[in-house]
Image (cartoon, rainbow, N blue to C red; front, side, top):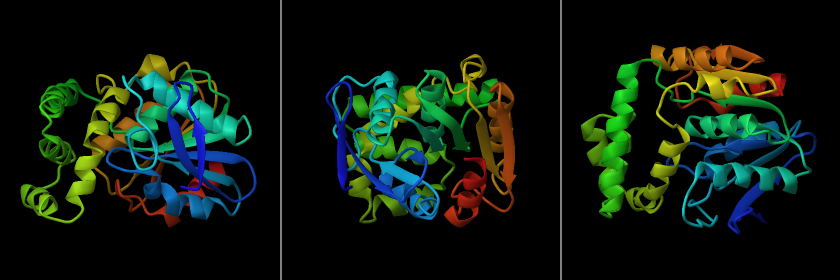
Length: 257
């Protein structure tokens, strides 16, 4: 990350910007840094000022305690101010929940796009997330970062043999390093259900995207997000999964933004 700005609580935020044109800030999901969305930023930079950053607690950014979702909204406010005072927002997975909350909070955004925010659409899904929250809080409280990462990978549906393979891989230490931020993403998702009343507060256009090859519940959640926002649009990217191809995603975002 080549640039830094300071959030309201004094937290240093590392970010990169590329291209010229209207600003769009890209927000990554759980267990990721700004590098995760950098390939997408490179594609959008042909028409926009594309900004990717390390969310607090990750990469080169700071991590002032105690954590609150409102602090991450303030982080986005600081980034928007740093790139001109107004921007579009894009968030993937739990990063999408953060940009939706930022928009509902009244930040100066032109529009918002999200990809597969993992909200539950049924009570059963909310109960599963509540159990995950309890277990995650216990693991992180006891300093068991590896167990916390395992809990998250299990929640995503990763097979046990793949989880154990990851635990024995060189990337595991990096995953453990940012494991505390799993609690941040969990907090951003609230009780896990689509926050319909909060989404109704968003006064700008919202594009809610899902992959045609993703599980049906993810598409249902994406549709519910679009239906709950007053200016919401739902779109499916055929053949895509949660690991969406930036080359497929970028044209859809550019058209909307």
